Image (cartoon, rainbow over the protein chains, first blue to last red):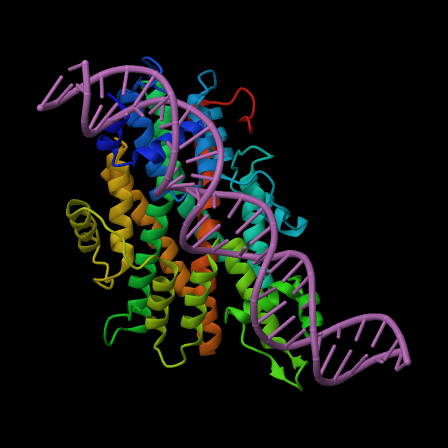
Length: 210
Length: 210
DNA sequence: CAATATTGGAAAGTGATACTCTCCAAAAGT
DNA sequence: ACTTTTGGAGAGTATCACTTTCCAATATTG
């Protein structure tokens, strides 16, 4: 198919496809003459993946680039793919207080979690705890435990549901569920908060949506 | 205190404070003469809140403005404050397929969740499910159930931990925990995924962080 | 065969966001 | 008297994610 057809099938403007090609997010089509290139199903899939990560996952194009690199890295073990996908999803350097980092490490140790010691998530978590401290609302330890147990449920379920057979599909499923599961979980959490709030405070009329 | 002292206490550059004042994110100080204004603890707290929402919560200044408006709205019931905070945290119009919206509504009905029928979270959730469909990895119903139960745990715990006494503090705690709890939960989820992945796939060496 | 349309490719332009810098005259400190 | 600081405003800057405009080389259509 030509670029116009690729645009039609994915609902992405031709100009944007050209931009993604320039940026190296989308591999070039098979060049047919000087002013023509042919695209195929793989381009349709890749383009849909990019749009899903950007629109629903809220990733920047820079992060998408990193995620795609992790997807395309053929040689790695599945466990490493997850680590690479996580690495691509996060800023690589976050600063956090040693106090919060210790609290995180202790928490992980208490529950016997086996995570990479240089995982950016440790620092990211500690950083969030620091921010809560700074605004004068430190995260209660029992609340943090609730978060951890809920996260464990979800993380276990995520990994259990990764397809076992085809490696390429498992890799894609890994980045998709990691990136798009987040918004799903956060939306459900807010809905659960609304439900819990309705029970705790009672509702005269529904909540006001401004 | 003068603006320089406010800057010192919050680690926010004077130019940025002036910018926030212009943008109406920070209320003006008490004007003392033509070239002087006095700031107090309330400005320090507000500024720290803004920075926490922006840096740790990842909110845009436009969303912060909405959240602060919800905080400052004195008249509302606590339940409405939560709704307003949620409203401010999300885009107000998200489109989703009727199929996914029905799936969401059914899910909420099955679990007896009482949420506002026009909550943007419904559409946001349905939109995320649509995105998963479009990339050819529809969200498995048992996995969605795991998400829902985990979200219920967290949402219940969040609301249970809101301070009961002072209303102003409860309002602030509501927006803080809603906005900053998200990153905490997502970081823990990724750590849980790493742990589950280590168990499922075994680890020869630790995951590679690129 | 002529007229029109489409393509790949590159460069420049756009609009939003979040600052950051420069300037100013009035006032405060020394 | 002189240096510093302040509030206020305007302009400038960097990044991001496109979008527009241009081109010459083809393809398609009549």
